[in-house]
Length: 264
Image 1 (tube, helix red, strand yellow):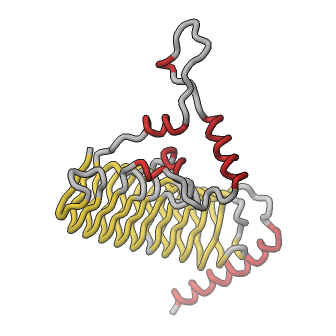
Image 2 (tube, helix red, strand yellow):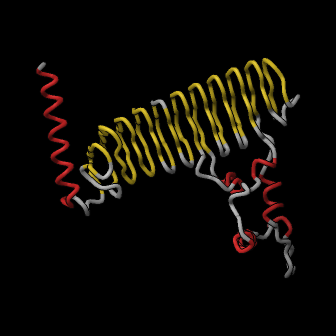
């Protein structure tokens, strides 16, 4: 009974504090060693505050960067480092450390481990052409593991999926890796108008650089590599080993094979 009273008192204190802070008491605080709340914006500090220490979420809180121990029902942040333990752990950009929950998401990159029913990384890279700049390294353990950018590490689960290049080991009932050049094609939704397409082409043209190997003394015209040429040079079939009931890998010794499959 006394523990219930203590818990009730803590909840009331958090509610009172967060309501006061929501009125603007800590509006300009850039960083804090602690944050707590019921739901955003009813939390001690607003979503633009960095937390270096501990964060407690009774329902859902949101902060800029969170480094340390993060727990609650739903945790939201831009970047997360340390340990996350909640029903849903969501980092909009990078997740570094360990995440335990039903749903774990690293929007851009994962450096560490995820353990839960559904784990994913790389979902915020909607433009597949830039996924080569988004490499995750770590381990995913869960019912379903899904990576949508280059991943180096291990997936263990009922189903393991890689929409891009995968270097490492997949162990599960069903394993799938794309491992081909189509992994870096644009989604149709990236450019929907002629103006957007021209803007992307213009940006790609600016990224083209000079190949040092082709430079010659006195040459004024050095060969310029196009984005497509750079992409082909960059993409190499990675080592991938799959162990499961059914294994899909276009670059494997067979595209589909039971028990095991591999590519290198």
